[in-house]
Length: 278
Image (tube, rainbow, N blue to C red; front, side, top):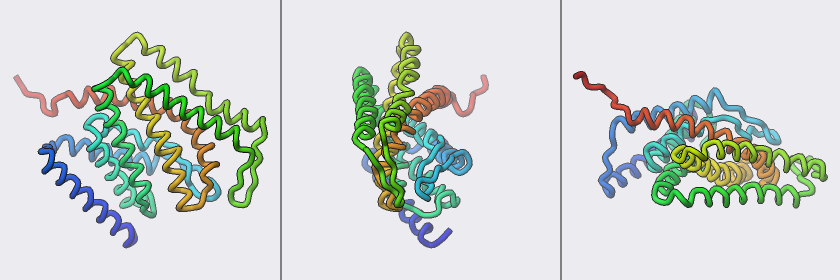
C-alpha cells in the first residue's frame, strides 16, 4: 500500500471518528457494542464480495462496469440500524477495500457512493414508517423517470464516439436496446401482484424496491458515470445507455435479494444474543 492510500485512509478515518463524536455529543446517541460488531461484519462481508464475487467489464480499456452484490450488506446496515450506521458501513467498506488492495487508488467520489448506498435505505425506511401510503406513488414516479429517460436518451442518440471509435445507433439497434431496458418490467409487476394479498410483505417489498431504484438512478446511472468521466474520460452518454440497461435487470434482482436477506436479518436482530437458562 502506497503513501497516498495510507494518508487517504487516515484522513477519512479521522473525519469519520469526528463525525461519530459529534453525533454522540449532540444527539446523546448510545453506540451499542453489538450494533458496532454487526455493522463491522457487514462491511467486511461487502469487501469480500467486492474482492471475490464481483466482475468488472472493461469499457474502452477501463474496468468501469461492475456486476456483483457487494452493495447488499451495506444496504442491510442502513435498513437495520438507520442511515447513520449505513453511512459508517459504506465508508468503512471503502477503506477496507483500499487497505486490502481490492482497489488500488482512492477517489472521494466513490467513497461518497458507498456512503450513499448505506444512507438511502435507512432514510427510505424511516420515511416509509411515517407515510407508507406515498411509497407506491414514489415508485411509479421513479420507474417512469428511469425507463422514460432511458428510452428518450436512446431515441435521441444517433451515434456515439469513444476512444476514436464511431458507433451508429440505427433503428434495429435502438429497438433492441429499448427492449432490453423494458424486459424486466413484467417480472417486477408479477412479483408485486404475488405479494399484493400480504399487506406487510407488500409494504416491505415496496420499501426495498424504492431504495434500490433510488440507488440505481442516483449512484449507478448519474454519479458513477460522472466520476469515471472525470477520472478516465469515458463518455457520459454511452455510460448512461449501458448502465440503464444493466439497471433495468439489477433493480429486480437486487430488490428480491435485499428483501429476502432483510427478512432473515430482521428476525435475527430481534433474537437475544445470549439465551437465559431457566
